[in-house]
Length: 287
Image (cartoon, rainbow, N blue to C red; front, side, top):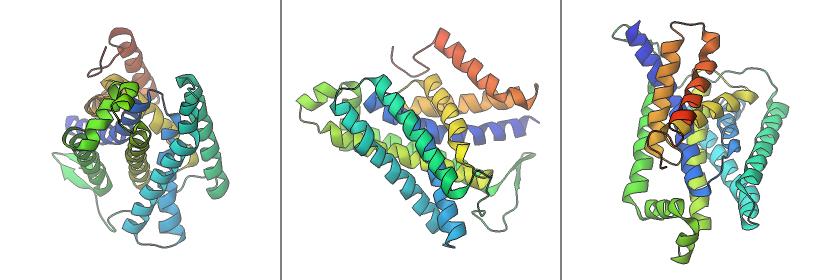
């Protein structure tokens, strides 16, 4: 039982981490909750369904195109919706409402184009069978999910810490106005940050789709868990988002072994409330 709990926690945490890292990264430079981030997961999943199942393209080509579509939609939202609002000095609340509107509109469009029924994606590794590790079962898709989450974290961390782009991202995150004064084009920095964050959301939706399937409303639960993980870890901190995601995944999976599975979301929100009361800035966040 214990090995399976650990494996399930790692799998869930990896999925939450992909969403949380992108959400937290975007928040670090914009300082608003981009709720449209969640629907990009659905865009990625349905992109793979369209290119792979409907057009018959090879799976990996469909995956690449699905990630590209999710990234493009995220970038367009930034350029066409959020950037104009920021240029008008709109508040974070206005931006949040706009992102909620974008989420709802895109989700409705997906349902209109593909229907509201639950759909499945082709397996990444045809004919692959589950693996047994220390008595626990894990599928090939779940192994890819865990590996992707960890690889994505390493890549994002290296970009932020070891590149010139990472330096300007951190400068913009610290103080956008000061960054502008010293000559940093924060408009471009935020746009590129949206590209990275949207890519991570698309990957989360695609891997979730391969694991369990896709439906238009799939972005909402992923968004909620990603936001909770980001808050637990510390908003604006990518390492914190990863840590918060695995902590959330572990807490949920330990809990559902002892109480009914219907209480899984209640566990997540209980942890969120505890952190908001006792440590509102998160594990690695700044006061």
